[in-house]
Image (cartoon, rainbow, N blue to C red; front, side, top):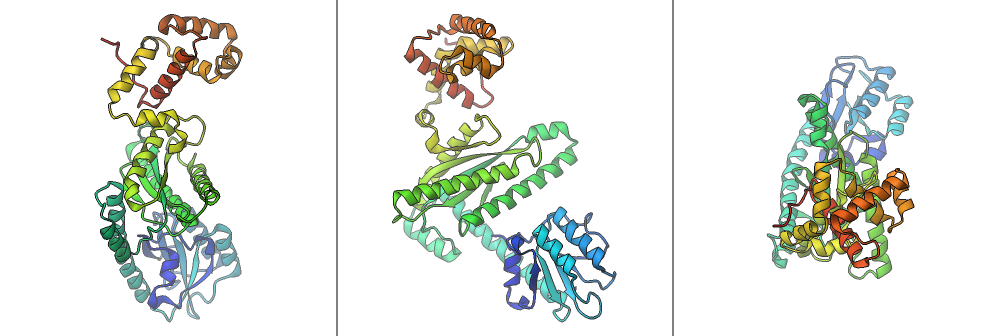
Length: 422
């Protein structure tokens, strides 16, 4: 559980704090309080700080306060707290308030009569309590997701004691970070690590904002390079139209999240898999499996967005449910083996050519246009493919087998080349 700017304003001893501007950012997470003494904060914050500006040791004129507001926005601070009174900072200029509103960064006014030590101690205590409660909630959700907690009575007791709302059905969303290896290949290790951590913080922040728009959020579970979140659905009494609308809303929210993260820090990007509806808490383990299967498919999707829903898998849903992976591998080998072996030893153009031909429903002109090659080039490649795997363009069953085998191959990690059958 995180502590937000809004939570800070609601702490019992801090009622005299007043949010003067930047209300759009009141849901920002506060990582810790930080009191500044320098003219600039750019080199002294990492992001998430609630920065206190006193003016006691250094004059703070309008120009300096504007600079601090902008730097806080650039460095992704949780917000600014400006202490006001007759001795140091008499008032907050209108231009400073307008800039905070424009940037969406919370700007809080604190009277000098409220001792700073009282404020920082209250925030520190709240951070510790939030961290403890958040850890307990996250562990509880993790137990539901891994299927180790199945007793309905115990689940009901834990949800009540932890203040978690599980009365609504949920969809499981899994986000996957990709591109880390490429980042470390392109940057010095220290720089790459700093960029990676900054991007991870951005993902968590944007994901929290996304979940907040959907309703009271549940804890996000971090597992290595993945984040697992639970999206609320309509109640069990809702009709089919309402359920469809809520599903569309969830999908649109995830797509918006991916749009916001796309291109932030190349080559890092986020893939997403979304489960079907999980009516009960005990269904969440199944939902996690579905979301991860959809995520596997999302790795192969073209285009800038990488989101796949489990119900969109079609025939792949059946294939992914086969427990014996060797059966699937043998099918791919029997259908495409010679072709994949050829592309492994030569410039790998024949497999993409066959994919384009299948996607164009056998239309040579459309396939050539898709590949940006001359039709004669495509025909030459198709003759090679026919010789390798015995493709008969008129055989509908054979074309179906090839289309399914290509889907399986495309979803396989690193597109492995099957070995020749014994």
